[in-house]
Length: 105
Image 1 (cartoon, rainbow, N blue to C red):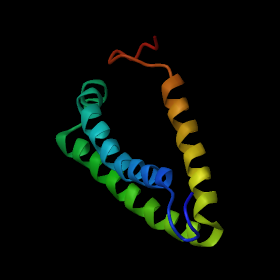
Image 2 (cartoon, rainbow, N blue to C red; image 1 turned 180 degrees about the vertical axis):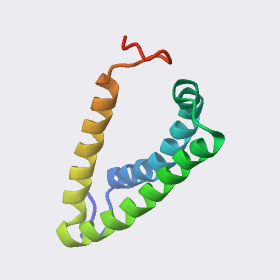
Image 3 (cartoon, one colour; image 1 turned 135 degrees about the vertical axis):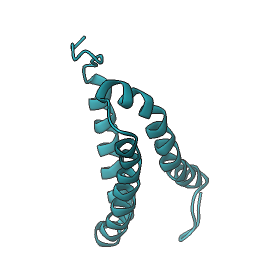
């Protein structure tokens, strides 16, 4: 059991997983670029823009999340963010896929 003001061992692992997620997310975006390129036929500049906008959106949400965490509590915001992440992942997983020809499978 952690003392008041100290972090429990499970909390350390949660924080480490949270620190790893943005790195993994950027790798996922980079792995998705060939598929985006094949299906949408963007210019190389547009593909670079996808990664850049992803990074800017992450940075902006990090600052906003910190401020909201100060206001409403870190635990509450963490749970809300985790639920939002799970719901967004579920929506992405259940979304119908399509090929480059535009036919929904």
